[in-house]
Image 1 (cartoon, helix red, strand yellow):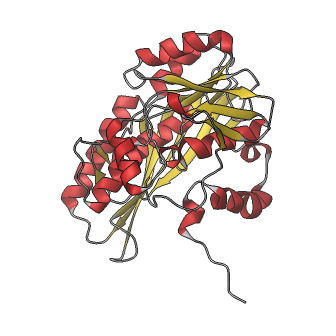
Image 2 (cartoon, helix red, strand yellow):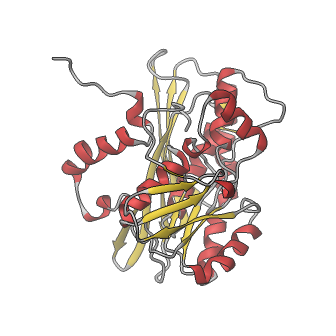
Image 3 (cartoon, one colour):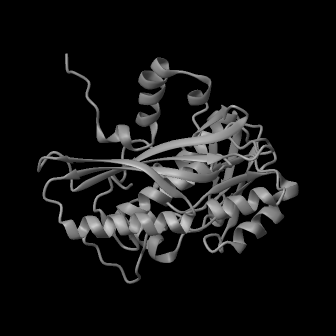
Length: 336
């Protein structure tokens, strides 16, 4: 009998990732905070509501158009904290460095980390550094963890989507994944494609302060928009319908996806969010997101229904309807 082994697909954020979590990890560590399966844990600590999240970054290459592994690591954790409706305050940075990494590259990455933290308004308050022998890692891996404070009136979770909610996406899809892939493979396109990596905490704070009744916030990273919507549909036991004609994808990214055989619905984003808000608040929420520098092309892409709970469907540009399943396999390994 062949021994079952971990595959790259287990790290894709898709079906195998969710299977590994639900079958192997959750049964051993199960508790009310972990079982929610949001971007971060919501913790009640002596009357304070805190959001706590952690993530590890193994992107290849470590430098790519528009950024590097340093700002990606900071922005990723800032955004995960923000998707809990929290104000990010503090982060940690753990470095696993392979022997032989040029000191000049490490300095650039550290400077980028510092600049990204300052831009997001968070403090780096603790961390760790390990160096492993040559060949035992790949240049540098980074882990970041973060803590944020959740305002008393905020209740944001992937399990809060309700029939009638409208779904907003804050910007164009698949920019990060295609930027990393093009750098990794040495691909050249007619137009520069750059990562969308960015801190979204100020956008979220403006949305929360506006009084809009925000039900769900999520940043569609690994597995892309398609997988993230499936996660929310499953958590909330609702149906989701999106409109292909409304999906914001730039011409160069769309062309690259068609050329390479990728679906932009399943490619990672690192500076976009999706927001579920009731119809009464959607116009106000959309206006607020568009006022942010990272949300100028935000659009409504669909809505939530009580039909087909746990399922996501796409209204195609030619008038048909097709199911959007969770990502199967790994389209682009080590994208974040």
